[in-house]
Image (cartoon, rainbow, N blue to C red; front, top):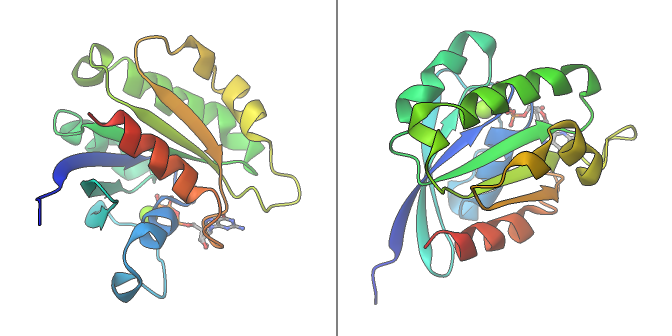
Amino acid sequence: GLKKKEVNVLCLGLDNSGKTTIINQLKPSNAQAQDIVPTIGFSIEKFKTSSLSFTVFDMSGQGRYRNLWEHYYKEGQAIIFVIDSGDKLRMVVAKEELDTLLNHPDIKHRRIPLLFFANKMDLRDALSAVKVSQLLCLENIKDKPWHICASDAVKGEGLLEGVDWLQGNCI
Ligand code: GTP
Ligand code: MG
């Protein structure tokens, strides 16, 4: 068959937002982990869609590891940024990390697609994707295609909508 186009994706966001849980759900079921633990440093994962083969850099979101993120920016051809919609207290920290990312010289002038997951939508007090998008000021991103989806990574809801969008924007 035809070889799928390969795309390097960076999966970023604060610790406990659900990055590893999301990526795990996107992997073929025989490759899925049963127990998800906080990521140390980063982990390289792979998943495929109908037309693309993604290599994901699943980065740790813990403060002490966030300085690793920038070393992979050059290689990233797309970004998945995950937010815990129930973590209102740290929404401002998520915004700071997003702003730092968007202003980085290896990201700033590149038209790379940004997919946001407003994750943990199942939590009783979760903010809506619209509200998360307002708090992160996503409408200010004018030079990159972006999209936000509400998701529940434990049940796997909302993930395919996001990945479909990503597939359509990785040209
Ligand atoms: P780091 O690797 O430390 O940066 O964290 P992470 O972003 O990879 O988070 P991880 O996937 O390890 O998930 C953290 C916790 O949130 C786990 O207990 C998950 O089961 C839980 N979790 C992930 N997604 C959801 C969700 O959509 N809803 C709920 N209720 N819990 C979730
Ligand atoms: Mg993780």
